[in-house]
Image (tube, rainbow, N blue to C red; front, side):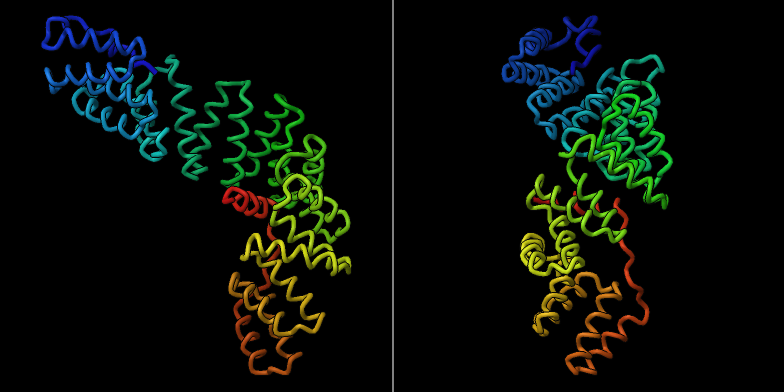
Length: 379
């Protein structure tokens, strides 16, 4: 991005010290000869150590070469010398944003947005950048008004609306998700990602049939969409429709063979369908991929207990209890196992642990998809 008036509003500067170096620097910069332009701007700075223009252009040259941290340092020096230099705050904010300093970027862009006239072409760009800064920070409620404003100015932007819908979902503003979903349908009636978001919102609003319908639409729109089969499978699993759920988990694994959650829930569905032989290798693979997968440890304990491998079952349940100590159901399973082994004292200790606990409810599909996405992103 150019610095606008910085290189144009130069009346009287040719008579200043370093004028020849300045003309040379501008010419080199315009030709894209960055290294030589940097040398020339440093010569300007040597002649005039208080040249905000030189610092600003040195920042621009660093930004051109994706050296954003260095660009930020130069822009800040320029800003301290000439706070009203046109284009400077925008360039500083862009370099902060691109260097991942999102909080500082938002703090730079916000006063800039207030200072821009409504007719400025930079209003939309800065609004989007503030929204995306908050989105990147995980401050979704703060991102929403900026993304809404930007989407309102750009009637054709599907990407903006999807980001807005994700922000609304993360902020648990479910009616907002559905409002944006209907906007997305006008742009792309076959958006699997949007269908999934609408499904997650509907389930959070206790509309399970509506959620199911949205995930089925998502599968139809794009059967290769990441997590689409897992999401539908999980809804079916919660309804105890295990054969149908298993089909969806298998479809997810066809897309993503190391999808840990699909492996674990497929194994659980197999157990519910009395197919322990099929479940065992699935559980072992899930635990290999993610040793912290509680469901896999609990189900493996079930298989161990049924095969009279009681010590192995104790080990698996103990691991599961350590992963989620607030889940009373695991402690109850462990207590019953100890009772079956004749270990009364240990059984009592596990029962005591449940005194102030409740059985963990099944997570929503939004929670499970978030966990699955985080698991995949960490690989």
